[in-house]
Amino acid sequence: MEAGATEPSVTDVPDQSRYEIRLGDELVGFAAYDRRDGTITFTHTEIDPSFEGRGLAGRLIGTALDAAADQGLEVIPLCPYVRGYIERHRGYLPLVPVDRRERFGLPADG
Picture 1 (cartoon, helix red, strand yellow):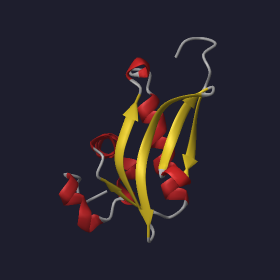
Picture 2: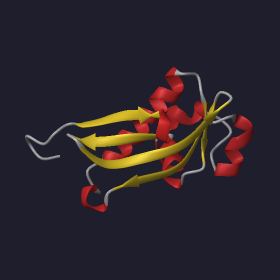
Picture 3: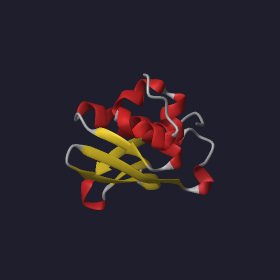
Picture 4: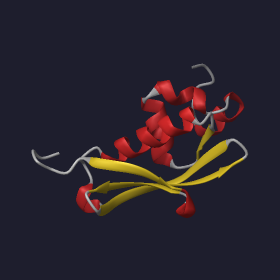
């Protein structure tokens, strides 16, 4: 981010079933989800192409996964970006049920 740039903010928008990331008032990306029965399934992550390469997707998903952990939700990473984020940040692996990790190419241990 450039000096003086607006700090990104991440907000859960349940009526649209997504987390949004904004710079000031500008929506620059989102992570869509389906939440039910103690589970949150991330289905798609998108960042506006003009904002790529700034770490915004990582900030978005890290915040969403932290919220899932705080709420005691199990995570189903259908979205390839979320799955890859969990692979790179193994501290989130316990959020994915052990019996579903193989389906996503995630290790059973962790």
